[in-house]
Image (cartoon, rainbow, N blue to C red; front, side, top):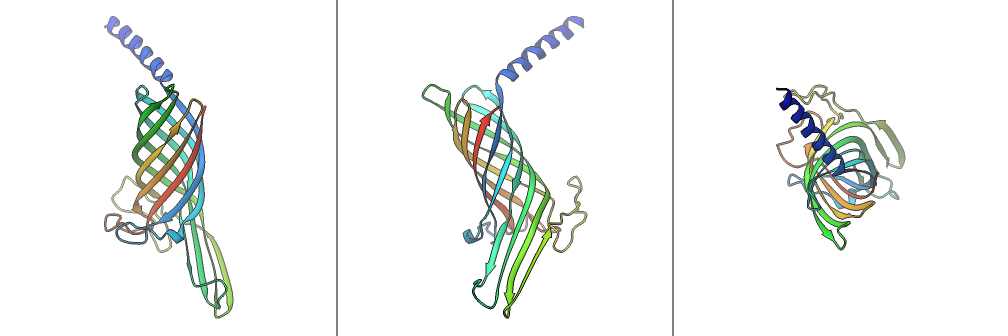
Length: 231
């Protein structure tokens, strides 16, 4: 028994030592072009794209050296959309912006293709993400019969327990707190830095109390451009 325990401790030490040598962490940040699907098939209105940003940490755990990695991450990221009806020069118009912020945890499986001296790599990958809404603003302004109006409010999230089948705290003008979906990523990685383009395909409806499986209307769509630096 003692011999097995000693062998297990030695094996664990070797494993975690190799793990430490074959993994890395990147500090990443960049620009988001956020939108929300407006049709049942999941399509969006390009004119309603909202600029935002993301920042966070991404791990890179080697599965097959120089070929395959698993990349878990932790990010603060902005999503949302904007809309407008009418022209700002007319007597009647309305425009609104919804900009929620989330803590997001993606896990991507990434294939790599070494380039040149193998310190530079082209990569492509995909995987799921889960996210929790923590803050954000809804803004609106316009003019009705020549009379201007405006409003700004903090976004309210439902106090939903994701472990239950129902959604607690749902209500009108309340956003679903938990988001989930799929990621796609493509880019180039060097010895000290990387650049990537990412796309987040939300699968959860934004409004609280709605059925996410009914159609693909009203779900997050986020195109991101990212620069990362190896820590």
